[in-house]
Length: 113
Length: 114
Image 1 (cartoon, rainbow over the protein chains, first blue to last red):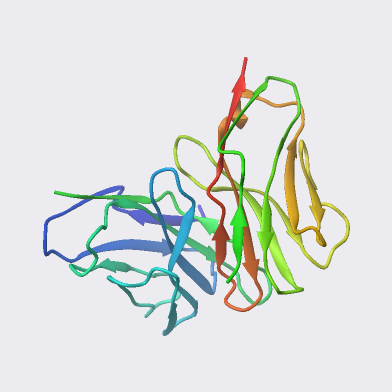
Image 2 (cartoon, rainbow over the protein chains, first blue to last red; image 1 turned 180 degrees about the vertical axis):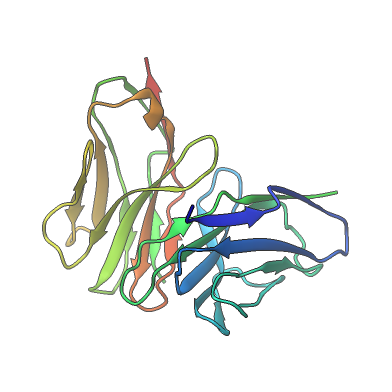
């Protein structure tokens, strides 16, 4: 089945710890995105990548890092510098090249212990 | 920077009736895309409908249609023959042609009553 997978579904972070959220897609999409959703709010853009080996900061990139070494994968690291990481994280992808509809993964819920 | 405003935090509709969700946006661009996404309790984001700004014709997908007023920067969603499965959060989103990332509104929680 084609789609976007995110793992884990739930993730717990201790103080001072870095954690990595996985996002994988087998849709052959060029573009991938990370969004953060806080309770009762819409999604906000963290990072995005239009092509392999290239990515740009979104609106709330501080305390996060990403890599895009493979077309299928766009992992997000929540670093210890992110002081309020508790949120729901959604990964999305799109074909790119003028076809802009984004499709979303099921999300990862990050909680701080 | 673009902004998207959804002024109705919550709405309720009876099953089989019609409901309209409002969305306004602010941009200086001429070419862009607009979307409505649905987020049911599972929290999966599901595309409902999309509209290209250069198209004057309003988009329609089965029971879902939009009223796109470019000059007024308004993009409302009409759901006809509401079904219980339509109960969800609905997000309006804007995409510019530059970075091609989405800017979301704060959402409208729709409850369909039996």
